[in-house]
Length: 203
Length: 63
Image (cartoon, each protein chain N blue to C red):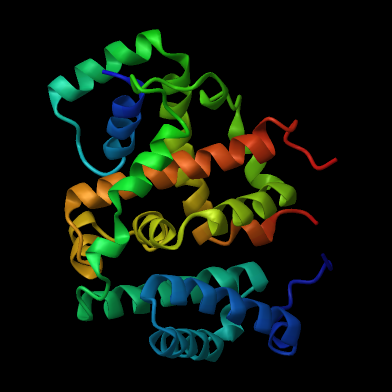
C-alpha cells in the first residue's frame, strides 16, 4: 500500500486485469441468480457502467467492488421480481436426491453419523482476515448444487425476503426451507473439512 | 427431536421466528447434543461470512 491519499481511480480504471476479473465474478454471480445469460449480461453491464461513472469517489478496488456488487444486487432483485416463476419447481426438489443428501449425514434415527457430527470451530471470526479462508470459501460455495447455491445466495447475499425468493423461483416456503437447510449443511461441512479441521492455515 | 430435525429448526430460525414449542424442544435437544450445539453456532457465522463477502471482505485480506 502506498502512503498516498490520492484516490486510486486512474489506476483502477486502467487496471484491465482487475476490471475483467470483476466483470467475470459479477457475471458468474448474476448468471447463477437469473439463470439467463442475456439478462445477466444486461444486469452486469448496467451495474458496471453505473459504478464506473462514479469511480472518482472510490478510494480503492475493494470499495469499488463493494459498490458495484451493491448495484448488481439491486438490479438482480428488480429483475427477479419482474420475472416470476422461471424455474420448473419439480426440477428443484427431487425427493430421492433430498434423502440421499441427508442419509450421508444422519443415521436412520436422524442422528449425526459419527464422522459427520459438527466439530467446534473455536473462534471462527479470525478466519475472515485470512486470504486462504476466502479461497476455500469460494470453492465451497461453488461446490453447492446450482439450485441450492442460487436460493442460498438470494437469501444470504442478495438478501431477498422469503416470499420474494419463493415467488421468483416458484417454490413453496417449505421447499425453500429444505433447500436452505441442505445448503447450510453442505457449506458447513465443506468449510469444516477443508479449513477448520486443517489447522485453519495453508500448508 | 433428532439431529436432522434440530438442524432444520436451527436453519429455519435464521429465516423466521420459531414458535415457543419449537424453541423449547430445540433447547432441550441442544443440552444433550454437542454436534447440534456446534451447528447452532456455525449457521449464524455462515450468514456473517456471506455478509462480509457481499461487502468485499475477501478482497481486503492481506496478501
